[in-house]
Image (tube, rainbow, N blue to C red; front, side):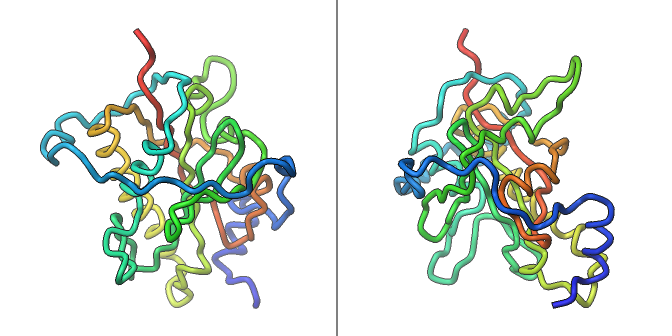
Length: 227
């Protein structure tokens, strides 16, 4: 299939990395998938979560438990009506074109919402590619145990009739997910910050993404630093 003009522009501008094999393959002995427990769905009231919602840029290095991660991912973009495959976050025309990757010290994992499991896509620690870098720039993603990566699949979005709208709707859909994460973190006592300063080319290469899939945003999540 010929690459649409919209994607050719993105490719030329460096927004999409060339299709490449993943670097830093996971150790053969490491598990390729990790099943997560059922999300608890227990939470405070919406009003209490909105009152506590905040951006926090300080994190403890403590890992999240499997239950905490499951609850977080379900709140972000899980199936709240599994019988009709509808999610906690809306998407334009219900395309469900945003994939969530979990970036941790032990590698990168694609979240399979259907099976509520993590599928390893890289053995590299890619968290540092989602935040700022350089002298005097704080990289919050390296301090926290989890960076959620939001990747849009433009092929799944199927907006060939109005490709100029594809990026706009993808950004809005990421925003819905990001706000879900903010409210969940407020309810669960976790810190989070939404990031747009990621390095999409390097991330795409490491994950072996096709040229129609683009990392757009990331969101760092973790506990507050110990006092």
